[in-house]
Amino acid sequence: MIAGVLSVETHKKVRKAQFDQEELHRPRIQGNDALVITALLANYEIKRVFIDSGSSTDILFGEAYDQMQLGGAPLEAVDTFLYGFAGEVVHPKGMVSLPLTLGTTPLRKTCLLKFLVVDISSAYHIILGRPTLDTFQAVISTYHMKIKFPMIGGVGEAQANALQARKCYIEAIKKGKKRGTEEPPETKDSNKQENDPIHIPEPDEENPVVVQPVEELLTIELALGDSGKDLEGIDPSVCTHHLNLDPSAKPVKQKKRHFGLEKDKIIRGEVNKLLPAENIKEIEFPE
Image 1: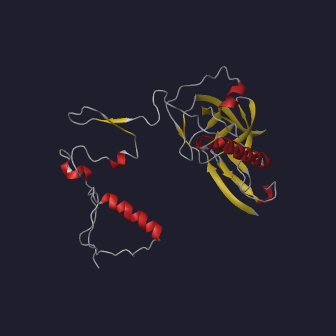
Image 2: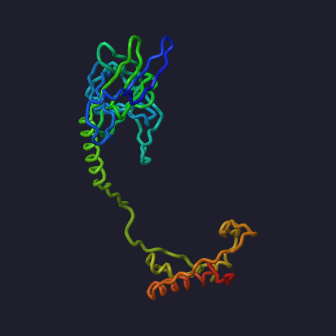
Image 3: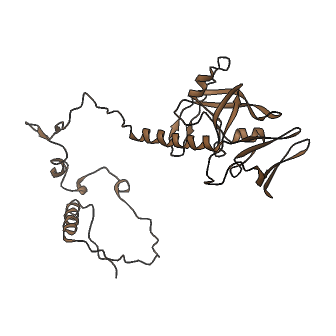
């Protein structure tokens, strides 16, 4: 029984990367394992190679790069950033071109790829994204836990390791929890003191007025007048909020909400603070 057939056309001959039901090498228990394979990178056997078709670049993590000791493959400077799923920004250390070999003898294929070297902690050593899949003309099947690619004389393949994938998943969760519990270092300006007194100059004052912030500032009237009308030089278009409403639209009356006595008292207190400042005004709501 054929579960699915995917084909890749080459210039010489059409090769079919075919996935059969008989190729299942593990029981279908969960069915959500990641594709984690073993590959040769610059003649180094690298485990924990994650096949990620959602990645727009191929990534080599700094720990694996350092252990390989690639003295003959220096990093090229790059002026680019990587953006994670949650929006986090990572600046790569550089880019390196290395030969990657997939498959098993005699159906092995080697291509020269460019990897961005990223110096962050990861459960994987390499992430192979869409550039690798396009270069190898590879197709993947998470159902069969395999990646296949056409070659002259046959179809090469790399079998994913479900056990290795689950170990990487558990390690990634542990690393995420560890990063989540780390508190950022506290920064404090040595030149700034808490509750510094604020000096408000008055015209022709002999004794400066010194007040404490927050509480006392809330009770200070505007120095230039008693209301916002006394402030000159500010265009109303700057400080006035306008609602973008359709004049022909039919008004809709919002259902009245009822609050408890305690909340109602708080709301009335806030309204009474805004009314004298003329930030709001009472209007008659249309019935």
